[in-house]
Length: 199
Image 1 (tube, rainbow, N blue to C red):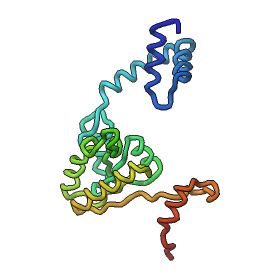
Image 2 (cartoon, rainbow, N blue to C red; image 1 turned 60 degrees about the vertical axis):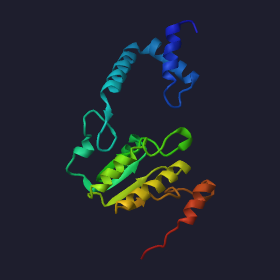
Image 3 (cartoon, rainbow, N blue to C red; image 1 turned 120 degrees about the vertical axis):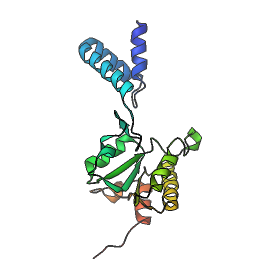
Image 4 (tube, rainbow, N blue to C red; image 1 turned 30 degrees about the vertical axis):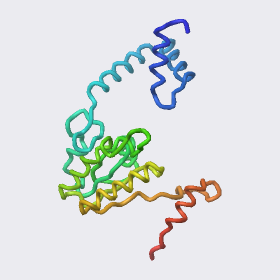
C-alpha cells in the first residue's frame, strides 16, 4: 500500500459482512477512481445514520423516533407479537406475508459462548410486554439453528408463563424444491414434523 489513508479506507470497508481484503480494496479503488461524489454521499449518509438512528423503545427495531412507525400505528393487530432476531427479518416478513401484528426484535439469539444471554436480548422487556395482557399470541420467528431453537424454547416458556399462546414458524421443504436436492437436516426436520392433510 502506498498511502496510510488508503489503508484506513480499506480497513474501514472490511467491517461490512462478507467483505474481505480484496473486496474492500476493489471498493476503495472504485470510489477513488470513479465515484468520489458517491463516496462523499455514502460517508455523509453513514455519519447521519449512525448518529440519528436508534432503537424503538417498544420493539427494539431501528427507529429515528422514540416509537417506530409500526409500533405507533393503530392499524396493527396488538394481539399478535412476532419475535424476530433482526430488523432484516422484520423487513422480510413484511414483504413476503400479510402479517399485520406487531414485532419484538431480539437483536440476536441466545448464545452463552458469545456472552449473549436473556438480558442482551431484552427478554425482561418482552416479559413485561406479555404481562400487560394485550398480546394473545407470540409468534416465534427465530432462525432454524441450534441457537435459534434454544431461543425459541426459552421464548415459549416466557409466553406460557404469561398466559400467551406461543407459536413457531413452520420449517421444512422449500416450495418448488425437489427432495433429492434438499439437505439431510431440512429433510429430516420436515419428515419428523409432517402434518395430516385436512379435507
